[in-house]
Image (cartoon, rainbow, N blue to C red; front, side, top):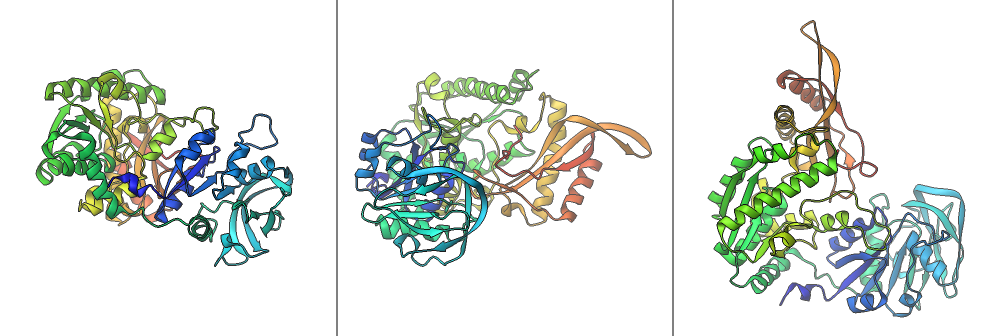
Length: 518
């Protein structure tokens, strides 16, 4: 049995560019049903070949009234597969099937009260007058033939529609966000009552099948893995080691952009606890030299990525002949880095795991987590008995502290940021908040401000503190840290880190911001 067995019952999500599309996928997987996101440009033949139990049309930033707005093939609605359109997806259903969509006289954004009108399997056990989250500028003024209204809000007389004979449903609101209180129940109704899915996407089954898949794919070949010490590469290394043992070789490259004590922690963890083949390479001087004079964030990422490839290739050749390159690439890495060809999604920023190395080194990719979200990877690690100190580590970017230094990266600025970052992690852990936060770290700003220390004028650097809560990193809220903790952080950083005289706190959410500053 392979992981394909776990994919026999699956949901296809067609992405029309919504910022919430990944939330849909995560919600579905939390219901223990496998799903995949594909671009809205996916051909009808490929949709048929996917063999989905149900199809979800995501929201999107466009209007069906605009010229060249992304639509879907009308024949999609003749396949007999249950379909759920969300926001823009509902408007596509209406527009393509002969209904009418008009600009709304009042753009509806935010919370609304959903009032149920008629019985629908989609709303079984859903409370009347529950809160839902709206985000739209158009609304439906005429339904296609065969459809009826099953719910409404004060501003949307057709907030939910269905054609029960064709198994086609539409929601003007977003059930995938936490602001829709009954959203999970609505999605469960679609998955289980309408699509007839089974709950077969379970981590305990997945570990066994993934180990079997890796053995079948790799055989007796050798695998090299770039180990960073983060959750993704750490769990990948342990999983692959369970599958192929000493045929796995891990390389940890010290790029000089690491947190305090990072290299020593990785060495002790993987050599002493897991007995994994590990080579540690100090290439810090080379990375810093390559970053000299670079201030643009994307150029920093590219420089670090290219230097990593150069060092990794050289060291891998020294170790022997490898057939596979293992990476801890996650599903969001793939989606966020690659704009769907012909679709409405946009590249946000480059990810170090996606692209480049295999072509240059002529290695086959081994990416066991390419279909998973980070919380699913953490669950896999727990299933394999990995310690919480690894599993619950906050994410750390591949380019390291370089993208937390706004401006040029030089050793003096690195030392300053590293010291401030260490204080933040120490105090967050001491306050018992480390596991409650998705990330907490320091950012060094490219400005200096006037201050007073010991009755003398200072003109020194500014540190920004960034702390966010999230479930998957795709969306995030700024963390409401206690004032006492913020005060302690500011006091320690200013007093202990030479060259800093001001500390600020970032209260931006994602979106519109990103978690990292660069």
